[in-house]
Image 1 (tube, rainbow, N blue to C red):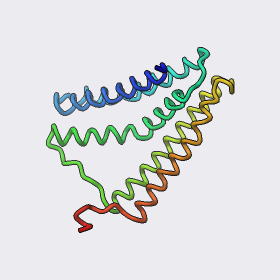
Image 2 (tube, rainbow, N blue to C red):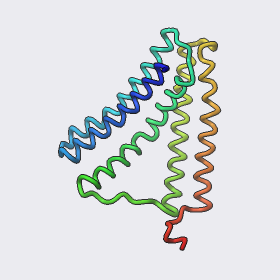
Image 3 (cartoon, rainbow, N blue to C red):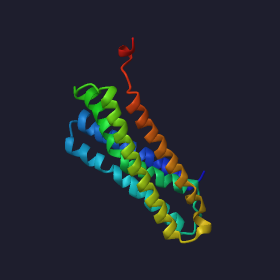
Image 4 (cartoon, one colour):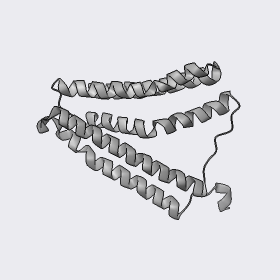
Length: 181
């Protein structure tokens, strides 16, 4: 198995381990400060991944699709990480601290959230593109970074699909099932 893929998987697991441990500390053990510290550790996982990719490439490694996937992981983590933690926090608060039930969004509220996600995707694409550019510049050898160039079109397609998603919910807002009967 590709070592960068192994590191990506380990970092994804590490991200969710810090999130779950932070929320368990916060809501189950009632250790709010400990929970906050554990949740604040999630960006460290991103730094570990970025460092591993840079070290691998500077040691003479040839960039593969997995190096590009690592850049994409970092972009998504920065752009969507807070939203994912907030989502998990809401579910934990409901389950373990008698917080309000998570609310399903419909209509204009869902449409606004779709546009916020499109903006988050734009941020993720920009961060990913920046990391790819950084990796290409650091290696400074087109023969070893060719695979990274192939990630740029994927980023464009992803962004366009997210825009289409937001536009579709602007034109045809998501309705509650009981509203369609």
